[in-house]
Every structure is written in C-alpha cells, then in structure tokens.
Image (cartoon, rainbow, N blue to C red):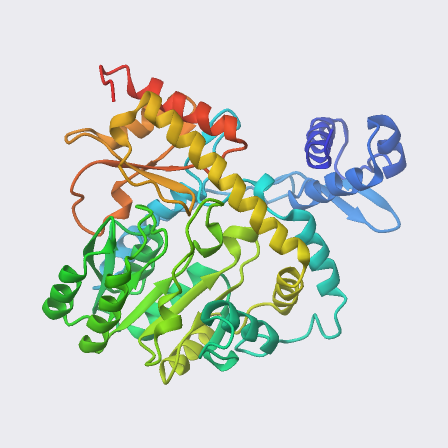
Amino acid sequence: MNEPSSVTELADSLRRDLDRYSEGEKLPSSRALVERHQVSPVTVSRAIALLVTEGLVVSRPGSGVFRAPRPGSGPGSAVKPGDVSWQEVTLSAEAGTHVPGAAGLLATLTVPPPDVIDLNGGYPHSSLLPERTLAGALARAGRRPGAWGRPPVDGLTELRAWFARDIGGPGGSLGASDVLVTAGGQSALTTALRSLVSPGAPVLVESPGYPGTLAVARAAGLRPVPVPVDAEGVRTDLLADAFEATKARAFVCQPLFQNPTGAVLSTPRRAEVLRIARAAGAFVIEDDFARRLVHADAAALPRPLAADDPDGVVVHVRSLTKAASPSLRVAALTARGPAMERLRAVQVVDSFFVPRPLQEATLELVGDPGWARHLRVLAAELRSRREAAVSALRRGLPGLLGASVPAGGYHLWLRLPDGEDEAAVVAAALRAGVGVTPGRPYFAAEAPGPHLRLSYAAAESVAQVAEGVERLRRAYAPAGRTD
C-alpha cells in the first residue's frame, strides 16, 4: 500500500470513529494508532494533520489530540443562512463589468472521478513527472544560504541568466536583465496583457486558441479579436488585415505545437509575423508553452521568435510547469526596452515576487543531471501515447482525425461533422467513462464547426489512452455514427 492511500484510509477510519468521542475527549495516542492500524508514525501524523485542517480534531503538543467542538454546538452559535441575492444586482450594475469566462480553463483543471479516463487534462500524469528529482531539488534548495529570504523583485540573477540562455541560445542577445521571473505561464500572460494593452482595447488572438489567453484578456477588459490558424500556423495575410482593421497593439500566439491545433508556425510565416507586427507598432506575445513537450521522433525545433528579434517586438513566455510539475509555478517573461518596466511594475503590484524557495528549487532542478534524463523519458512517453491515441482513432473514429499529427505537445484536435452537437458528444463520452474537451471554448467568436480536443498526457498509461479512445468510440456510435 502506498503512503497517500494509507493516509486517506486512516483518516477515513478516524472520521468514522469520532462519533464515539465527546467534545474535548482525548483520542488514542499516536503509538496506539500505529499498533491498531498497522501503519507508520508518518501516516498517523499526516492523517491527524488532515483532520486538524478539517476542524474535526484539535492537536495540543505535549498533551495529545482531542475531539473538536461540533459546529453550532455552543450557545447562540447556530448559523443562520444569509441572503446573498443582493450580489446579483451589485456585480451586474457597474458598466464595463468584466467576466473572465474561465469555463474552458476549469474544464482542463478539474480532476475526473476515479472511474473516468482523463483525456481532457492539461497537465501530464504524475507518473510522467520527475518527482524524485524535484524532491531532491527542493530539499537542497531549502538548505541554501538565504533560501528563505526575500528575493530580488525581478527574480534570482542566476535563474534569469539561465532563462536568457535557454530562450535566446548560447551567445544569444538576451541577457539576465531582459528576463522577469513569474509565477507560471498563466501569470506571465496576465502580466504581459495587462502591461501592454489598455482596458477596452483590442488584442489579436489565434483562432482556435488557448482558452487561458481569452480568459486573461476578458478579465483585463480587452477585446479578443480572432485570427484564423491553419496547418502552418497563423494566417499572416489575415493577421495584417486584422492589425489594419483594429489598430491593435498586441498579438498573442503559440508558434510551436499550438494549443489546440498542434500547428508549428512555418519558416516564411515566422518572418512575416515579426514584419507585420513591427509595421503595426505592435507587440507579439509568444507563449512557448510546449518547447519541453517535444516528442522523441520530432524534427529539430525552430528557434523561439524572441531569439530572432533584436527590436523588442517579441515578449516571450517560457514556463517549466508543464514538463516539471503543476505546482512548480515558475516561468519567465522576456522583453527589451521600456516594455520591461511596464511588466515589472504590474508584477510588483500583483504579487511582489515569486517565492525564493521555488526559484532556488528551480535552479537546483535544471542543474541536476536527472532533469535532462527526465526530458528524454518524457519525450519518449509522449510519443508512445500519441501513437496509441492516433492508432485507436484511425481504427475506430478515422473521420475525426486530421491529416497532420503534431510531434509535440500533448493533444489532438478532432473535427466533428457539421451539425454535430459537441456538448452532447462530450456528455455521452463522460457517461461512457472518458473525459474529453469540447472545442467551443477555444474560439473567441463563433466557431466554424464542432470540435473536440483529446489530451493523451493526463491518462495513467499508454493502455489507458487506447481504452479512452475506445470508450469515446462507443459513446459516439449509438446515434448511428460510424466515423
């Protein structure tokens, strides 16, 4: 039995036993619980800590653990339901109220029930993460001199220098002074958009594109304007038209393994994006989220747009979270010129700085030989999962899979037949025991057709990916569909 399940089972047992104790009565000692339940002292300690956080017991060092008072048991302590209906008026009365529209994000962050195969999640399964390497890095980081002190506002100099080399390449034009350490990629996008675009102004986005970008833009009071994407990335002819029509001052894009289509911006279009933005006097916010999610059989990757931009057109976002851990909220923003002052000012107002222990742990992680090994293993695992998903789709649902299959990222973009109800397909799939993502949240305006996004990184294994696609096929078939 692994430790987390032992903790959960012991906590459940203790909860059931609590009714046998009166308020303030002492529970059995830790030693007695170890002997009774045949678990380790660490398991007992963690289970008790869980009950403390739930307010069920009180721990008094040196005295023991006691049954906490029941809610509402004291005189005059009955909780009366409040009336929060006034908020409906207040939250809607102010002109220009901005609702983020986080449904698309929440869908990929929600943990499905145990009997549902996760082909929806936005993070790799825990078995694909370098947990031992991370644990060692965090332990070493905690012992570094000054590790728990206040870091520089921009981030640790050594970490900023590492990001500069990682993004710009050895001997590149980026330096530590061009880097701002942020609390993950989503925070970096928020800082960039709030810094560079005024409320009420338009911002150009890819269509379809990452729902997190749309949510950030709307929360900041911006107007997302979609620019279509095809197999070569953003349509640069339409990008030029969009800048001309809207006078926008920023374009957000994912040039590498774009979410959700998986497109890689072609070489001719890379130069065009920079030229068009420069002519418009606009920034390109480059979200390079998938660079460390390349598959083992991928061709050589193109350089980031930021590496070929001496004029400060590109503001680059580079996060380690996807490849390392959802809880390693460390990323970098790069910018040149006065834009960096804007970015720094917004970050300071929002969050002061990224906690130093996380930055120190990141330095330990990227300097550990285990990090490079992990990336190689991850690349091989992602390829295997992609191949399993593609093979299963070609067997059971061949009409949904496009001609191009990306050799990076962690998802496939499926096109449903015109007139199909994607919400109904998603609901039927969930009833069949597999979670997939509807396509609608990926469009800033009306969608040109129904889609599904299938993520193969969050599933527990290659076999589970194949089984998940088979469950999707069974859910899709009852209405008389064959592909």
